[in-house]
Structures are given as C-alpha cells and as structure tokens.
Image (cartoon, rainbow, N blue to C red):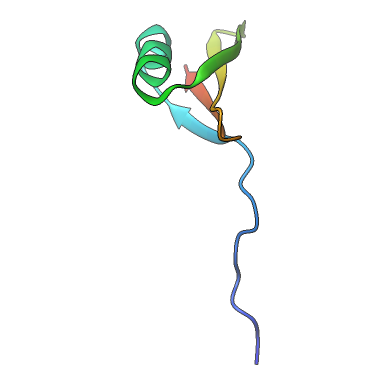
Length: 62
C-alpha cells in the first residue's frame, strides 16, 4: 500500500498583492511579521517577511 503524501515543512509562501506597501503594513501590524528585505526587479516588487515562530512569506506585486 502506498503511503499518503504529507508535508514535513513549508518554505516560503508567495502571496500576490496589488499594493506591496499596504500588504507589508498589514502583515507587520496585524500578524507580527518583520520585514526582512524588499526589492524591485524588472518592474515587479518582492518583500520577504519573517514571523517569530519561524514562518516566512514573500509578497509579490507585479
């Protein structure tokens, strides 16, 4: 019998957004994430946020 697939760990979660600044504010003010890095690449913006419980997300705005 084949074992069911299970996650042992999730790396980054990419969250699309239309307003990167508002999204950064929301995640930092409401969910205690800390902004680790924010940069622009070829017209798109990416912000990496980290939570104290070892979870990270990446916000992506194009």
